[in-house]
Image 1 (cartoon, one colour):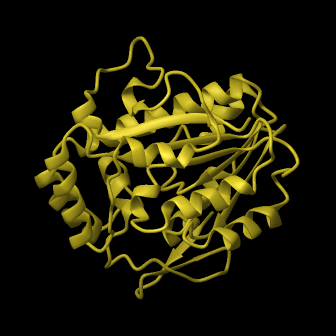
Image 2 (cartoon, rainbow, N blue to C red; image 1 turned 60 degrees about the vertical axis):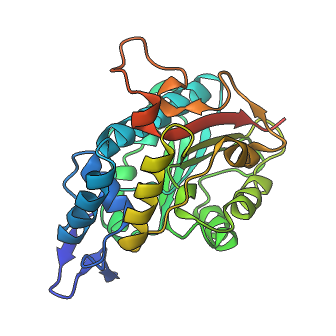
Length: 277
């Protein structure tokens, strides 16, 4: 998607002006910086620097989180899931979710959603579907789950009568209040059997002082974060059946044999995948 840059921090993707607000740090662009991406700006890099000062393992945590998404998506696609809804997509970083899923099942369909306007300007990278499958992108905010779901349904890409895997990877810790209510709204929209739920989340369980420092750093840069311990994280999966190995740190969820080791403290994130019975 070609985008024309303007002096007032707006771009024009496909003729529609979008205000990027690049003078304010955004969690998606800070995450992009941790992943050695290039779609970040001075405000994002400054905020990332503050986070790194108190949590220097942030890049390792980001890479472990991304790898968890890859493994969870691959496992679900191998089990027969062919539809995915990825909320909190972030800046496209190949391989993206649809690339992982379509390597297993070329017919896989994926809808991405994010609230960072700059993701919209890069959305074309998310739309290179296999010929047999489909992808779409919607600009939406998880804090308004009903509007988000309406936008997803309007794409016509996902069939809400068939199983859908809902991916909320490194997202819900950016919802300090009401995250469980939002998750329940999203879960209730999925078909009753065979749908899946993938979540990773910052936790204080492994390094409570580090988690408290990262909460303060993100709060100070205008992106409030709330770390959640095991019991509170487990509530997101109420009524669903956890896949082995259940709730664990992101690098310990079905790790690849040749993966570079990442400690629980470095990751400081819980991850799990569940199936709706």
